[in-house]
Length: 275
Image (cartoon, rainbow, N blue to C red; front, side):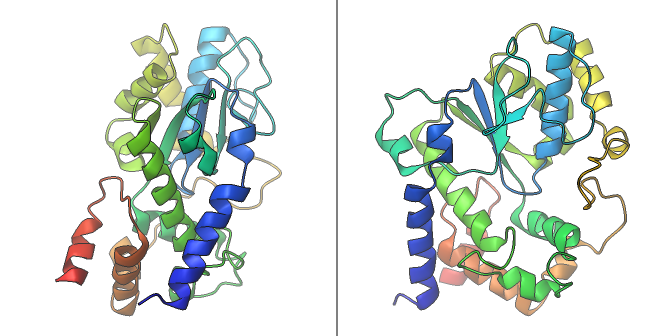
């Protein structure tokens, strides 16, 4: 039986799929990085910017959120002689699946373990949310009016880009935050190959990883942003956030609404719910 939440989630998904035309309008780039929030976008952008700065003899980024080399949909890269790669947290428009003959960039889709992503976002932005407790944030707002991003927006991101990956595997590349941590050099090399960036040597990769290290990025915060992008303080283990009712809510919600889990084995929880 369809619930009120089912209806709202379905309607909101359809609304965003057909009315948010940003990626459809801004598709004339060489590459597009689309990311789930707190999935390593600053890290890969700083790495890739360092690669391009070395290859094209460009000045280094002024701060961690400098968009001069890897731009944004509404602010393309400052330099026109380099691969035009931009970043956003956007979703594919419905026409993208229906009009494959149009030009589209290659899409690098950044994802992260859903629990880790939610905890990271909460710890960074809880001050913006009136310091609500994690249980309140976890349950979120299916209408997407309360939080910058929550479990509902992340499930929709994974569902929509999962559809794209199934349809166009040759032009959509998923990259897990966990794989970047396990093999940063190999991940960066695969990204360069995916975006057809040539002449990327081991020395270029090593230099980019050093320039985009956690410590180095922490030294270059954006002076216009008050929240801390690179966080170093210790926190509870992620499992502690999802004990008891929080864990039960997470399992039930992903089982009901998540269609593409990008290999994070959230299907396991779904199988348990169905048993």
